[in-house]
Image (cartoon, rainbow, N blue to C red):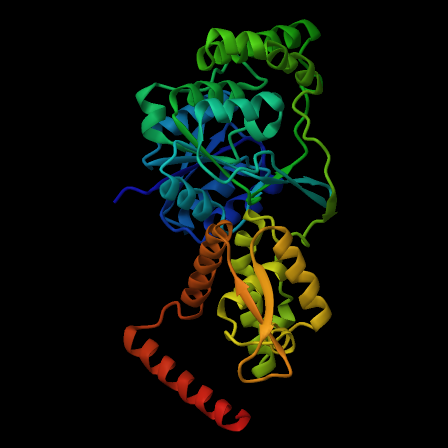
Length: 437
């Protein structure tokens, strides 16, 4: 059975970061992939590392080739790929455990031709979140091009590694990299792909760690005259792309924006610095001691962290903090006649923090809160929580996260074991209710 995704990693003298890169791929939550490691004539131990990974995992396919450059290597891998979708990773970078799952889910649920995602930029021990498109809906070619026009030389649009492609579209049009170009060759590939695609979707979740170690054209030893010529060649591709996508009148109206590419390209594809944090603090983490600890308190702690792990993607995608996402989940399940004190208790918050977070959620248009007299408790006002239509996709994402959390807890259980567990859990809950009532 053919894999659903072909993940392509060109490898050249990448011994230092290759293990981290490959292990991040092999540890994906999504299982239906093949990993193509193409050793492009490495002079270090990269080739041997690739072979070791292939020996230990049947999903890994290794190719050893004479050095031909990254474009030729990617082209070769696309010729060998068997998956419905193509995903690219650079050998000195790595991806989050949910990267392929989120890309494929978005592609399939939205029935689009390209998914582009946010990413993390890593500089030393600091990491920052980078994205550009905030719209959650499917975009037409013209709408996607309009976003790209605003930041024409941005990595977000230019690179391969924060995107998922349909292989049938690539093959139908014979799309490949140009080995003669060593700057923005992936951007040129993207332009040709976008010309052939009809629908595009942005995933507002950072799933890729881009390590800022790549050199500019100048540090690659390329002459100034050749650098200028390459940039002009890329601009011609870019300019021709918009002449194809836009009608003549719209092209003339947007010409100045289009020509901004020449100015922005002078930065050589730099990723705009953003607010950064220490690497390792950007995602849910659990200490080794907490993972090994025994007892009910450790059990409850790990369950909460596991739920956070799955809710994190939904929170990032919808511009929420984890506490806001947790509260939204609690509001969906809250007792219908709860007062402010009872709701705060149910959510595990102080009343002050509850009020602050409710105000934030109201400000984001995700909840509507009104107070009314309780029929049973005259002395306390109950909170009436309503969810406007704009909250529906967010609640759906949180429901998906909850389903993944529950599935992870019972992973590997046979149906009989699951039934026994649920029966025992209900008995435990009955005991707790009897004590607390």
